[in-house]
Image 1: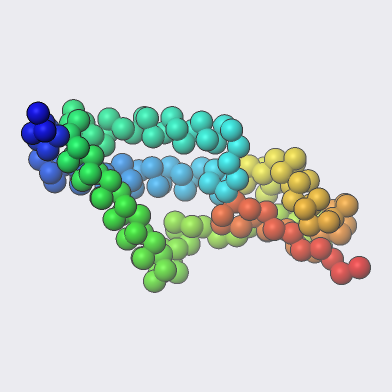
Image 2: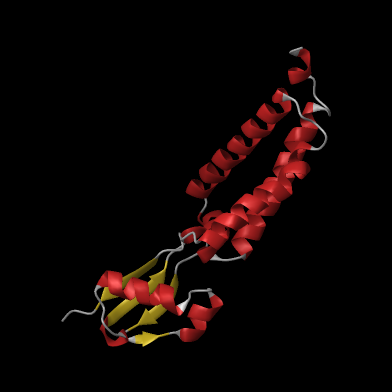
Length: 159
């Protein structure tokens, strides 16, 4: 009865290989979609994450339904996540590749509309960040940055 929980449907190393390939592919895709994808979740972003998990499930698990196979995958994915964090903390170049760099959205009262569009920052999101910083109009903005986390930070001009 319990034997099927631990019988793998493919060699153990294939689980690890599949996890590495899917992890790297999804990491690249998420990175290519920009900072806003991971920064501030909307209901659409949450839906994307759920569907993405479903989409890659078969790529990870193949035909295997064993408990042991799932545990190997979980350990591999957690290990990869730890290793990427470890490497990011030790390499500025890798950190820039994976995390990206902050982007200037506005400076000295001038809002860079092209940059907002390129970074997929909606006017509503930018206005929300202005309100949060206490800026009533663009002229009050000393500096607005889209952080690598997807958060918009705003520095208000001295009054």
